[in-house]
Length: 160
Image 1 (cartoon, one colour):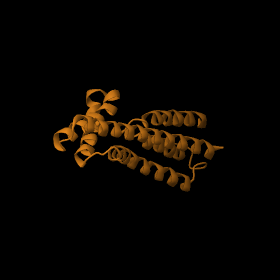
Image 2: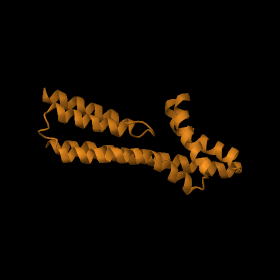
Image 3: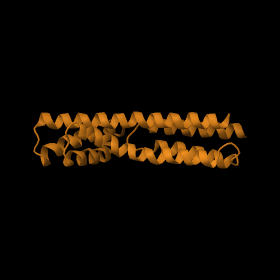
Image 4: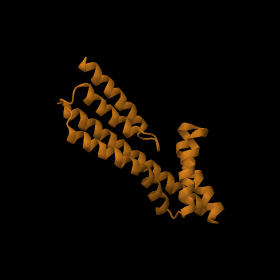
């Protein structure tokens, strides 16, 4: 029975790991919930409170990664406040049109459009901001992927 619980927890963690690369998706919280559920199922014999608190801290940090990564990327490439808001709105709206592509194209287009309309930027300058936003979101996805891998490896080390 314990092996089945472990396999299920690892499967859920893998799903969380895949989702962790997508901006605004709760991949890291899914990994945390799988670790917590495994701890509950096995009576917290192998998962300590300190370990859970560390994993919770990483999970909370991952929420900031989404917001900060896009913002840093946009600001690094000269985004105005309007461009940052455009990227955020685009990141929320884009996936409704095409979940996979919209996650990346939405923030890019949002930043470009808002820079042109609200900040009166030239198209080329707005494109630069859009690419900066895209780089920021992709960097955030990479960082969340690393956090997810760390959580899963730490979980496995906790068991052995």
